[in-house]
Length: 355
Image (tube, rainbow, N blue to C red; front, side, top):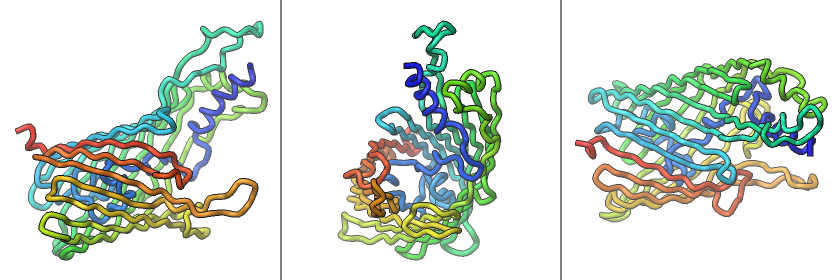
């Protein structure tokens, strides 16, 4: 019993504490907006609303009015919650600004390290709770370039990570994006963490001491105090086609690149990449049907029987009326990847609703 309860807390801290100096802030790779999830996140070229602050800040210049957006999702069988709110507004006919907050957290984690008292007795009153949460605060700016059809955008983001009373971190980084539109064709490039995003951790030594002997030989040393998020590059191309007077079709493709070796289907020692494909059928700018597939990975099979390609198919629907847009997405249909499926809801409002 003692070993089992100690394993529970060790499991949570294994994933929560920084384990490497090269990779961090993975919660920022999840994405925002159910409309984008429905298209497998292949929106780098076409994003042009309040959520552009995340996908490509260059798209903010297309705002015609102030907008606010919110999203909620649960992950890992409702253990983790993911919340997002954002606002954006045009400054003039050529520029716009935006602000967003993301929180990914696991709350009310049982701390069982003190479950056994000094006499070896189980005392459930010694169980306490703690939470771990990651926050991102992003300020975005976008502006049209003198060249017709071109716009650019930049993000400045502050990262805050908290693991109960054990540890906390601050981080800071930049993103930059560009978009180009020519007739019905759209192109976009988004560079994330262009200067690398640096996180610095501080630890409460007295709190860490309470778990250092939870399991013999485990949690004996203080984790690394710094993390670096390596740059990532996303390239997108899309085309809008009028099917009939009432229906239009938007098809898009993304190539998401990391400058490190991963399980992506395109991978080398210095760079890896995975494609994403998405579509959206709209009916009189009122109802939307979306689909997409992405996250192509080489997955190791049990028993060392080689690898197979995993992928993540998504589906989504949306409804828009008088400045109010509600979207829903179901991710990883059929459980074709290592990612767990999730139901995602989001809401977007034009400020005209409040006037």
